[in-house]
Length: 173
Image 1: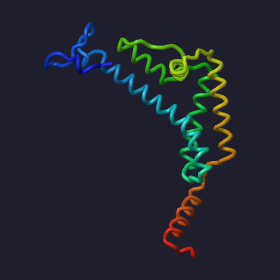
Image 2: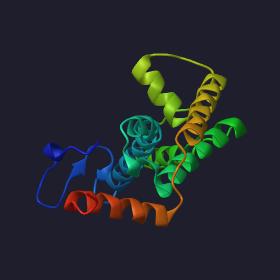
Image 3: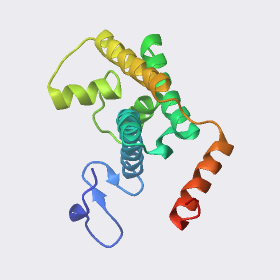
Image 4: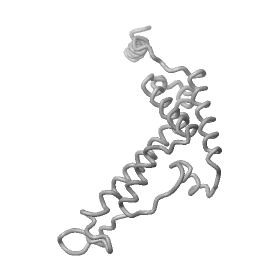
């Protein structure tokens, strides 16, 4: 990663053995880190989304069942499961590794989740274990569609807002 403390002179940063960071590897490192951050955000959305759906329904959060949120969540996990079953490496993983290679950084093999779970948990597992785990997670997401169905009715949502407004104003006494 670029270290501003290593900059020399007034013309910009000079990286040892790589020329100028501004004209060399820095943009690729930065872009790879952005892709990694996006990837982490998607993982958080998929995992945290399921937790939010269950918790939100148990706590009667009406917004949690909005169709756009539930469809985006379903699409995200469906894409992960399809990639796992088809043996396709996630495009974000491929893009991140290509950018890291251009930045002359070390890359990793396998999927993004597999790599980081192995680093975090120090657990080595074959790819089928992750495919199985993704599939179980997708079944949990599907179960939430059955137990806590999303709202597709815009009119119903508008009526709900109207009722809450009337309650706040004391018009329904």
